[in-house]
Length: 404
Image (cartoon, rainbow, N blue to C red; front, side):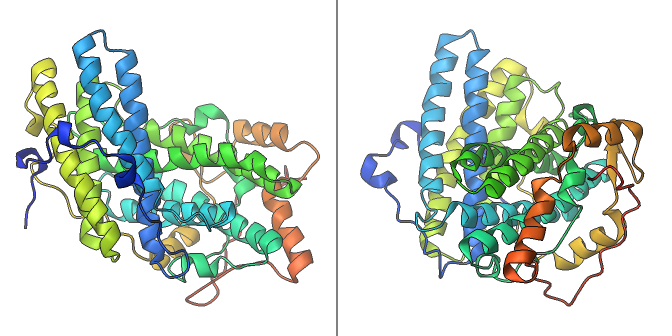
């Protein structure tokens, strides 16, 4: 059954504001909830946070007071949605447990997007990033076992494997090598635009989360690991945001944001196993339909085009959280040794990459390597979960002599 959000009518904007009681949602049960319910919550928190950030930036560049007032009204509702979504996460979960869930989102959401992406260049961008998030999950899982004496398997529930990806110390690249070529807004598939916006939003919230929680730890290895991986997340945001065509007008960007929110809420409403959470997805979808109607009206008025010229006439197949083990293992076999140069990719270390590695590392091993060694020493072995049997990690063709 097709669903065209441009032809649907949602809740009138003035009826969308909620009081404190309505915003005081009950969190999910951390021990009995579907791990992918938690992943959907984390994803929608990122989508809503990006919507709020974008609206603020739009308002700062908009000279029309009436338009800024309209943005403020929609943005207030988006901010309430963000709180309602993020407050579904249980307060009982530790920061590291939430971190592992964040990385499960990064792995399975990015892998799914890569599988569905029709543009080969954009697909390569997602394949490249997911192998790094895969390794982050492995590093944090070892930190979790080392300082909280618990195993990440309970969090990811064997839906996502925990094993090495592209080693984290090899993720640190010169900033110019994190910038990709953007899609062409005039010819890109509508789904490609939604994919780019979704993954950019997810990585941006991860970057912000690590930036804020990292210094709250007392353990030096934890502080150092969050700092190291947090800088990789900065690279990932650059990597993904550069895929978006910078020639899109503010009105077109707003239209894409609102359409993507409708798409994501509609997708998760189809797949949600928790009926209470599904009711929130449905409520927010009905709010977003009105936001999309307003954005489409402004797009027609100020951009001069019809929204159907920019977005799909019906929602694509729903975004789905599901295991991606076989896909990831194939990537591990074929693309683990890939790095970037300029806007492209290579399988050999190049001079700029080598110089950057030497500058960052100095005489000390990075935290991402030491956390594995320290957990082996403390727990007897490193922590990993390989569900379909051991997977031999290919020898990297990238020269590793720069590592001390």
